[in-house]
Every structure is written in C-alpha cells, then in structure tokens.
Amino acid sequence: MIDFRALLRALADARVRFIIVGGAAATAHGVARLTQDLDIVYRRDAENLQRLAAALAPHAPYLRGTPAGPAVSTRRPDAPTLEHGLTSR
Image (cartoon, rainbow, N blue to C red; front, top):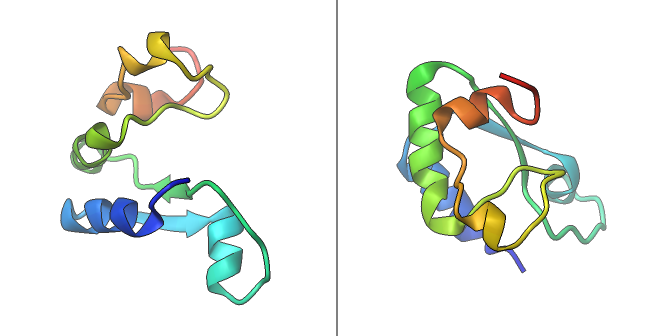
C-alpha cells in the first residue's frame, strides 16, 4: 500500500506545485472510499517538473498505463517524461 503521508511530505519538501485529485481527494473531503493510489495534477513548467522528478525518484514511480516490473523500474520518470506523460514526443 502506498504511504500517502510520505509521498505528500516528499512533494511538499521539494516545493512541487500540485493538487490532489481522484479517490484520495474525495476521501479528504469526507467520502467513505478506500483508494490505494495517489492521483495528482502538477504544474508543467521546467522547474516544477525537475522538482517533481527528484521528489518521486526514491519511490520508484511509473506512469499509469505502463506495465509494472523490472523494465519500468530501470526507466524512472524524468522531467521530459513527466511533461509528456503517455503521449509521443
């Protein structure tokens, strides 16, 4: 299970500009819902992307829709990947 507190602390400590959306946001507003992920929307300027990539790196992130496993863990999302998401470059 994801340690939401640790991830949010990492983002806040790195001064990443983001908002929480999805199930975690609904839970924070009192909806009785169990969620096992943390969905965020982040500012896509170059500085924020660098801060986000650095903050997430220790947590072995992967983009939604990509397979989990060794192949993904060798390519951690960097700023350009985060900027483009799952779209082509």
